[in-house]
Amino acid sequence: MNVIPIHEQSNFSKTPLFKSESPFSPIEKVTARLAAFGSNDEIFVSGSCVRIAKNLYLTARHVMTDYLDRFGHDGGEAKFTVWATHINPGPEYSIWQMDRFWLSPHSDLAVFHTMPYNDTAGAEKNSPLVGIDLMPPAVGSRIVGFGHHSSTGRIRLDEKGVKHIEVNTDGTTTVGEIREIHFERRDSVRLTFPCFRVNARFDGGMSGGPIFTDSGRLCGIICSSLPAHNEKEEHSSYAATLWPLMGLTLDVNPSPYRVLEKPYPFIELVRKGIIQVNNLSKVLVQPSATTGLYNVASQKS
Image (cartoon, rainbow, N blue to C red):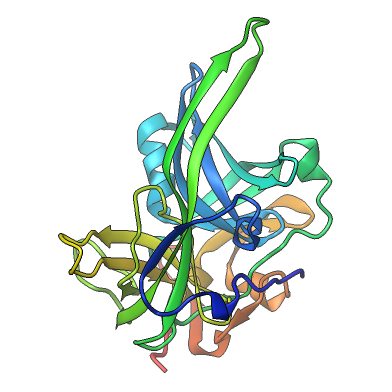
């Protein structure tokens, strides 16, 4: 497991900051820009994600449901293709194509499995990963987030009839401080899941991007934001807490890839050492007697 530190603590203070990053920065090694392709050469570039295992990415549930709403599905088969793309020096593009995804019933979280789409992705030996902290840091702690916003994309044909995919995104680091933690939910309508509020700025398209602690561990996923009305007012942004992820039901073995007949909870990937987490002892996962899914609960401290 090639877990890497994501940022240098000396680079940032708690003061809110919103800064564009080079596509070759360390944080870009574990985050990817997302692009969805429908029929008739339609492309929709929106959302961010973070790699938690070689073939597994974590994003916001509403990013995936946006794709479903736009392109539709036929039973259990999505009518679109999704690419998660990393940019390496050269530049070279490491493209991973989604072949299966799961939506959390407990939170604004989704996991998707990928296969290498091009030779650059297929040649990766030690894909950089992140360690996960299932609980958010305390109120007053600094967080560092990342996501791709102001995204555009198009598919064009050159004079030889060859298709070219052109995508532009702005990868941005956002820094702030945790203002409030909602252990169960913020409300019963909009943010109905465990989350925390920060004063960092999140722009459209950054949904699904990672939130890191001071020690560089993944502690949340960007899910919502209320922009400041003026320069003197703070942003009011929200990240989904990660412990509900442990109850997500999967039916695939990520390495080697194969679909399994018997589904299992995400927590099994932790027990097998595929995913590295802190605070697992604070999470309880049990099978539901009625739904066939898994119930998940957490201690506050």
